[in-house]
Image 1 (cartoon, rainbow, N blue to C red):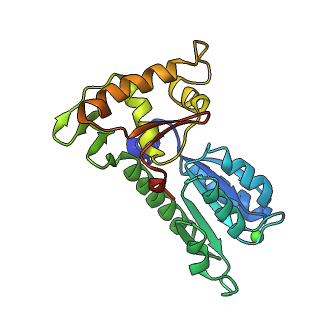
Image 2 (spheres, helix red, strand yellow):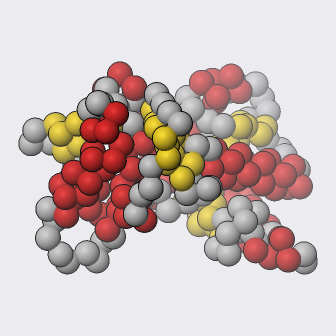
Amino acid sequence: MTEHARRGIDGHNGEVRVLVVEDEVALAEGIARGLTAEGFEVAVSHDGIDGYEQARSGDFDLIVLDIMLPGMNGYRVCRSLRDAEVWTPILMLTAKSGEYDEAEALDTGADDFLSKPFSFVVLVARLRALARRRTDHNLQPLELGDLVLDVVARTCRRGTTDIPLSPREFALLEVLLRNRGQVLAKGDLLHTVWGEDFEGDPNVVEVYVGYLRRKIDRPFGRSDLETVRGEGYRLGSADLAVR
Ligand code: CA
């Protein structure tokens, strides 16, 4: 095995985590065994509702989703995940009979589809492509008008002005930009940026929002980072919310 393969396809040291939602137990186990042998970390669910719950946890990098499932069919699982703002790439397994439309699979928010019966080699190739696409997507600079946060170079600028940020300010701005147009509760920001184990004063969020405003907004006469009273904070107007 090459060093690259051992390290996983996303370039991190951690393995790529795949959730396989497939009620045909033998097929599910076969996929799981094969993907594990390819270096993926695999979890299996045989039921739509359970699969949805597991997928919603956000603990996966990729999801392989069958359409005909007990509890909740694949289309509904997919649509519900997207409605819940879970953007994990989904490869949907469609029936070859033509009973299920591949266009419909893509329409519900799936990223790719593969019709049964499929070649395992093709499945692995498609999953690797999806994982790469996800990684590339996550590395794109984040923008709001002329405010640009480059997550690779770790730089921030407004127009042509470079804005130095502390690591914590950077992390907070990254979360706000990734969810631009959406109100983020103080508790959620605390959890995401300071971590679950943070035991200090939760008002630290307000303090850092203040720091950010003094860097990204005030010197430029802007007020992009808003306080939504009683709810939290929002960067950019609500109609910018990423759907
Ligand atoms: Ca099935």
